[in-house]
Length: 448
Picture 1 (tube, one colour):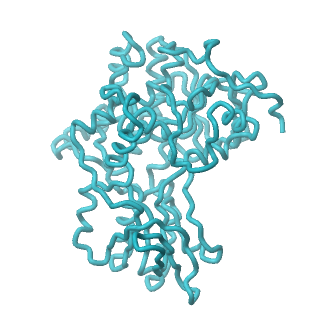
Picture 2 (picture 1 turned 30 degrees about the vertical axis):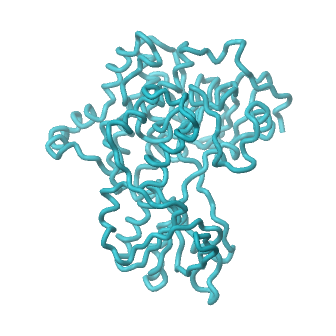
Picture 3 (picture 1 turned 90 degrees about the vertical axis):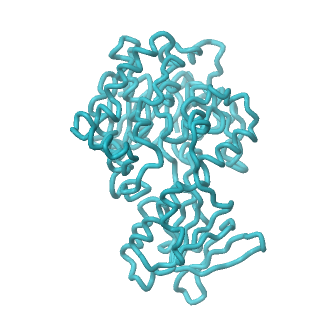
């Protein structure tokens, strides 16, 4: 039996929770009906708690929790005259409302309204999901395959999970979350010494100190900084070498930068040149460290930064440890370490490819051009509703929309705006995805 839904969202993290909240609000105000299915393999806000995410959950968020699931509360941009009412109703799911119900609001304000640990923000997200129920169905399972209906009108989503596998047909499919880890080529025999920025890095905790006293971290963003903190807490005397392909930068926030994240329309983001947009993102989001968290390593003589691009990780000559082969300004170089933690980030395109059936992938590339060949760092053309441009039914991937639509869509900086853009076409926004002049994906036989 095929279950019908208007929107299927993968991942009950921050973005998935924000979308669920806004669906609940729109339905409760009579702006629906919208049927949303939220598929989560582990549990609500699982990536924000111990043992399930890319961090230990004790790290402090880089943004204030005031930028909650409804922020920036400018729904009029998507829903016109109903926007003010939508924003007022969304305030019932705000961070402030959450703290008031817990009895912690005054304590948080008296403390200076600080940023909070990831696990605290995760508890907030779980609280939102327990209340966002109108038109929202939470399914415990894993999306196994994404294909197209025979008429090309809807996505067919196969979900594996307990108690049994199920299938959904939806008019829009949204993929949230960070994606899959980008790999670094390495010799097979040292796989146990090449960890990733997901829970694999915790393997260091089980290694004897003498076998993990020299650790390399590859990457230059928040994931790498989280790894530095984790390793330093676990191995106070370990030598840490951080390999970055660009000069390390620290994040400096001001009203000018923040407003671009909150509402890119304020600066007419889409009209800026690609180089200007890419330069802004590089200086405010990618390859930058939070200065407050970085300060604790300023006088750490056992922590160093190495400028170079890691090409491969090989086995050390004696069979103990690894050799990091990297390209520096001086040419090819090699350095030995006990372990390497890959914190180069995640690949949403690769995750999407792993879900798509072969016919669906081919048809998408017929519309968009090649997506999975060549240099994946090139721009992916994302349209207003955070969807692959020209693809119908809607295939929405907020994490890929930073360059095309605004930097906040690939971060936690504008969760409410993400939800508005995802849901706007479902409530008769400025463009109707079902109109005849829209491109549609047409495939033949989807049966394998």
